[in-house]
Length: 80
Image (tube, rainbow, N blue to C red; front, side, top):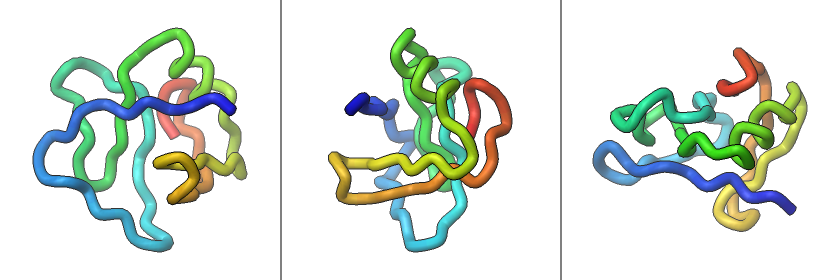
């Protein structure tokens, strides 16, 4: 299926734990990097369409299915 391509890390690797709540969205600018509590993606036509198409309850697979996250809130067409 379609793949989300995440952006650059702002610092050290971000650890994800079971039941963590985090923001997932299109980077607002070049300084909006991945950091604790937020995963960003570069704005491309495909990435914008993928995020826009997500709804509450959508399951997203990260790292080719090694991790699974569920959308619990949709803030806008660019932010989950």
